Length: 95
Image (cartoon, rainbow, N blue to C red; front, side):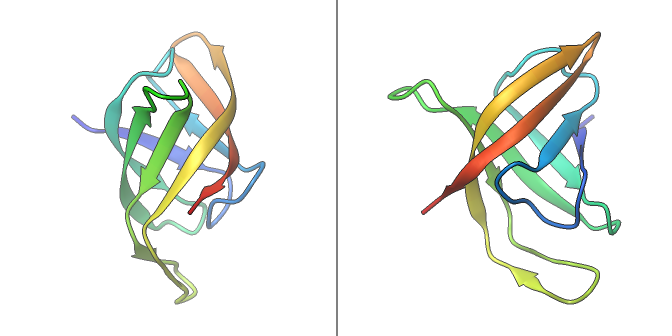
């Protein structure tokens, strides 16, 4: 079963939050992201060995409103866990 993260908005941006139910700590994994507009896309969570920064690789997708979003990579700024659930904050987009 693939982990499904929940985004608090229709797209990612610096400061946006992503909830990861069933993931108590950051770990490399394949997941899907459910955005606030109901769109689901694939993503991967990885750790950069050079900088020890957690990265979120998001596949390209189209929002419910029709905006086409290219594949993107984001670094994660903060994380907080509540039981078996984790919330991460997007730090920013990488080139």
